[in-house]
Length: 432
Ligand SMILES: *Cc1c(COP(=O)(O)O)cnc(C)c1O
Image (tube, rainbow, N blue to C red; front, side, top):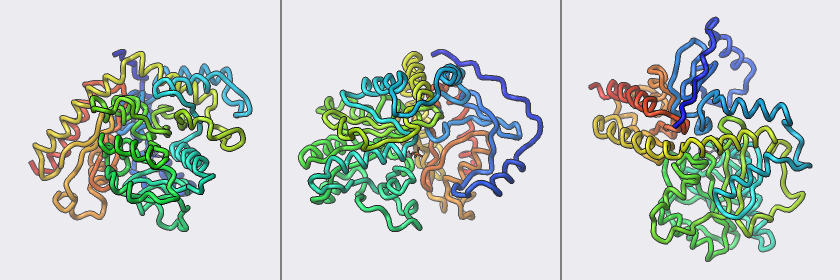
């Protein structure tokens, strides 16, 4: 694998933390629970905060920075494309959007792609496709999973199977039902005359790193065919090679009998697709690819020449450098290490979860970890705090899990460094 040269960190002039913090307090809507960290620059899998402290970033900006920070090839693609053409609107054609759609279709199956700007927006497109599909029969309801996450728009919080995102925003948009994940019978029972689609994450991310089971996927495909429902996959977090295949269902169904022809009818994407440049998309399989005809859907910024040039470059680099192999082999090693931490420190860690570079370390309940028991903060948040102190960024998921969603060009050395830091923190919590 080709090593990328990290760019030299900028000189630290003075500690801007209080300054930045103050600007946020005064001027930024406080809708996020943020950690007390402010970053200034990054290189590859490292980022530096404004005090000059270096962190190993295994969170990847929540599964986004697929090629790491300040990747010189992304920078080059941005500069080159921005010198030619940044934006023309979707009133016109341009090369980068066509080529990116071709890339995505080639990795899946005959169909077409719509471009937007985020994951929630990609899912919104899928809800509209589902409604269009069922419209003449009066069908509009989408079944989603408990503990799912589909974004923060009104449609997204209606689709998301977690009460905490809905609270305070009632009335919730109608048309969604939630059933337990990986429970085919529950899906079957939830189908009503109004049901038009089933939407699941290939690997639940915000809900705690739970992959869809192979039998669930195959059963869903059959059920959707029988009941004339669209099978939709939210691959915003688990897609774009993060699982060690382009799509996580391909990874889950590898070597599974009778799975060779499996495909959903629609897939939403974002996060790693742009490597940090905001871009989202959804793919629709034949024969549904033309359901949204002229005038039915659109967005000003979707699929700009600039965004698509970056996404095309990311595809190119992932393929040229064989990064999928890195995700598979290093992902398997990391997963083994997380499991080892579970065996070595069973009073703190309940083991590893996930596939490829979408991994979670499951902690024991807060009450069982002496150092965490006294605080109101969830175990996952307290763990993240301690990891920050030790120079490692991981992403909390629910109350019990910290996620590893690293860049695909992570090196073995960096992976080892991450595990060393993680183990040092876990060891202290175990009182060992
Ligand atoms: C992050 C995420 C979304 C929302 O994406 P945004 O870009 O934040 O709108 C939707 N679905 C899943 C599975 C996600 O992880």
